Amino acid sequence: MHEAAPVGVQALLPAQQAQQAPPLNAAPRKVLRHSVRGQVLDALRAALVDGELVPGEIYSGPALGERFGVSATPVREAMQQLALEGAVECLPNRGFRVLSRTPRAMAELAEVRALLEVPVVLRLARTVPAQAWAELRPAALAAAEAAEAGDPARYADADRAFHRELLSLGGNEQLVSVAQGLHRRSQWPLPGVPRVRRAELVVDAAEHTALLEALIAGDLPRAEQVLHGHFALT
Figure 1 (cartoon, rainbow, N blue to C red):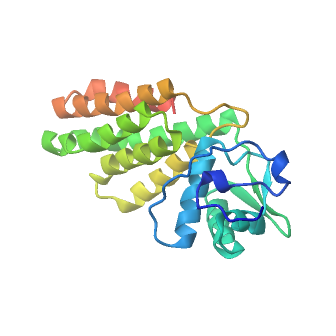
Figure 2: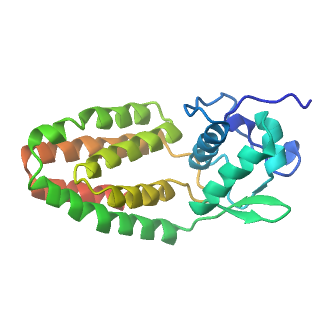
């Protein structure tokens, strides 16, 4: 009854009794970090994107730790990181509540990302050679494959990786860090919204390829059009 489950999103249970918990995927999720805290953090982030950590629900460190087969300490450390990222709030002596997001908040995030990334990419488009843009095709392909698989968490990672490589061409590490934080927050689903559909992921991924092709061709008007459309759908 209390046998520990392997690290993965299927192991997440809220502080309430198991029979009251929202259903979670049965398949374990592969995590690549070596530290226990890192593995737990990866699993929790994936569960946020998949909507398996439900907005408004309270999750306790000891209960999650039992299900992960680890002590409560790495769970609390991971949750504290998520609190810093704005995903959860700490409730003393109770656990962590997943914060709810509103359509307005998501629209504001998309607007800020566009204000940050669009001018940077268009500026780089005037100086970065076509070959450098072409070298981003594997990142775009990885996102497209994740989209075709219909895996929101895997796509979220690939999507951020593509934008990270795109902005990294400017050499401004602080800008990349800020943009990545905003990007991660924009990937959390809204309360009550069902799992992101495969078709939506495919459309989003296709815009990465369209952007690269415009940048490789030196077509700045087309690149700007794709960028604005991309963030309008974020």
